[in-house]
Structure formats: structure tokens, C-alpha cells
Length: 102
Length: 373
Image (cartoon, each protein chain N blue to C red):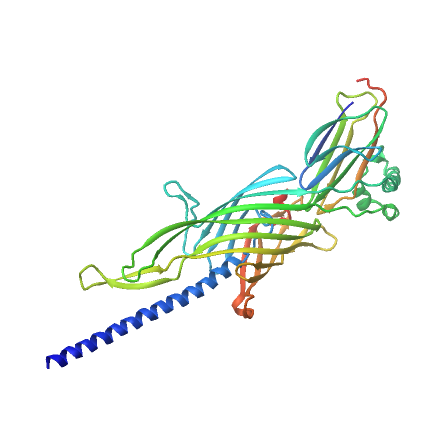
């Protein structure tokens, strides 16, 4: 199951991981970028990310299976800061579908 | 009678020769004394940070810094950001004298202009924050659910910790766990070369003019340790070389075989060479108005120690940030002042009035870590 993640940050540092239920990092994106990772069906994962910026910033994270899988909603995360900011760990839990039908 | 006349002439001649020797000796003494004085001045000049930060671009991308009574320094920086973790830049800087009306960085016939510095810099970030634990995530999820319910948000997971922290009611804020997240480390390496051209004489009799150019390097390695996005401590190593012309002197000499005299102003003596290894510790912090996170003021105190010269420099740049745009980035030209004190460490410390210096800065604009992103 090809899981595709796209990250955008206007300024500052952002590090985004795909982590499995055993806390193993499957994939990392640093800053603005796009990467894919093979995930196992019917398994718990999470997107965990951190960001750090000396000025106002905005970021977005878009993640989905490629090709798309019925029953799995694309993930969209975004936020804006108005000044210098150091984040706490941000996370989004998700489970890969058992059904692989596109 | 002839004998007496001859002895008289001999005495007169030897007195004149002695007087000439004395004049030459005095001239040499003065040249050496002036040279020593100049050497000290050169060392002091190479020590004054003139508003430079530990990281390139920290102050601005394009800047014009006015150094009191020393002319101005124009700088243009072309920055390339491969991604937000790595950036590189090319800088071209031109020293402009007090009386110059324009700055020429490059002349197509003569090449790089005198006083032009060309430099390259690379900056990258090292950051590996530790993953959160399950307890932390469960507590945050509880707070997210509560916030989502109260605000009719369908997917509670799209609520961010930052939103809970800033927009959530006290009850939710109190639920939030907090862990210490590592800060990134910034590394900057820069190398630049300056071309300097000198015209001088070393022979006081012929006053033959020598024209010579020197290209001197300046190497910097800076490592920055932020305590938060508003303040950092940086350690910098610098190796620099440079030349400075000896003081100019006025000479009067015969014009050809006529009885006329002609005046000539020349630097007398080889340009003074100076090199040093310097260690700098710099702290930088921005301040915002209470209840606002937009910076209005910044300080950047630093201490520099010259290993070869055994000198120390204390510098306190103060930046006044006029305004910021919607992204909290400073807009327009920013003003500032750098107060500095340079002293010898070998003997007694310099008197404050001798070692003190002030510089006005006009930059566009200051950004805390601009070069890094």
C-alpha cells in the first residue's frame, strides 16, 4: 500500500514522520517535500511532526494512498502561527484499510 | 692658510653629513613609530565586528552599514534555499571610501575592483526531536476531543496542539501535557576573498611608486544553539588575513634638473599584513511588546578573542525593528547602533575612551534566522 505524504512550510523547520505502532519511524520528510512509503494493511500508524520557526509560518500536510483506496479519507492538516513558535509533538493516528480495492 | 680652509671645509661637510644622518635617523624613527601605531590600528579595525552576526543573512540580505567616519560598506547577497534545511549564498561586498561617489564591484577591463569582497556561505540545520510517548498522545487526544465537541469539529484529530494551547479554554489548557522538545542546531560555513590594491614607496631617495594587489581570505565557521526561536547562543571561529596601507606622507623633491620643486603624497613602506584566529561567542535575542509576539527590538552582544593578537573585543549591537508584515517579518529599513570596546590583553586594558567605538547600522531588514530558512 503506497502511502504518499506531501509537506509544505512557508518558513522555519518542519520534520514529519510516519511511525508504526511499535514507535518505529517508517519515513521522514524534512521541510517542504513529498515522499512515499509502503504500509501494511489493517495496521495502526500515526503521522507525528514537529516544527520550529523564528517568525510567523504556515504549514500543511497532505497524505493519502496512491492509488486512492475506497474507505480511506485523505488526511489534511494545516496551521498558522503569528510569531516565533516551537511546537510540541503534533500527531494524527490512522489505520490502514484491510480492503485494498482502489 | 689653505690647510686651515681645507680643515674648515672638512668639518663643515662632516657637520652637514651628521645633520643629514640625524634627519634620516629621525625620519626612520618616525616611520617605525607610525608603523607600530598603524599596526595597532589595523588590529583594532580587524576586531570590530561592525554589525556582522554569527550567521550570514541574519541581519539582512541587502545592507548598507555606515561606519562613523570610515565611509560605508555596501553588501548584496544572493541566497539559494535548496530546502528549509540547507541554504547557500553568494555575497559581494564593496568598501566605499568617504569621498567616493559610487561603488564599482567589477570592472570588465580591470577585473574585480579594489576593496571588493566575494564570498560563499553554506548553512544547514541539525534537528532530531524525540518522538512522543503514548501517555502524552492519549492526554492530548482527550483534550482534542473535548475541544472538537465544543467547537463542532468533525474530525477531532485535525485539531492541533498549538490551537488547544492558544485558543482552548483554561480547562483544556490545563489538560495539556508538556514535554521538553530539543531545539535545532545551526551550522554556517563561509569563505570570502577580498582584493586590495596599494600604491606605495619604500625608497625614500627615489620615491619610486610600487603598485601591488593582494587577495586575502576570511574563513568563518559558526555553530548556533537556540534556546528557543527567540534567542540563541553562537560560537564562531574566524581566520582572517588582510593588508592595510601605511600612513600617507608628503614629499617634496626637485622637478627634473630645474630648480623647481614638486610635491608628492605617497604611502611610505610596505602595506601592513595582519592575520588572526578569532573565537567569538555571540548571544542574540528578540523582544516583543507584551501580549504580542512580533519583535520590536533585538540585541546581539558578543565577545571576541584574538588568539594571535591577544586582543579582546566586546560588542553590543542594538536593533530597532520599525514594523513587521503579516508574517511577522520586519519591513522597510531598520536602524541600529553597535557599541564596541576593543582592548589589548597582553598589558593593561585599553582606556575606555581609546577602545570604544560606535557604528550606526542601516539594514533592510533584521530577521532572527533569516539566512537559515
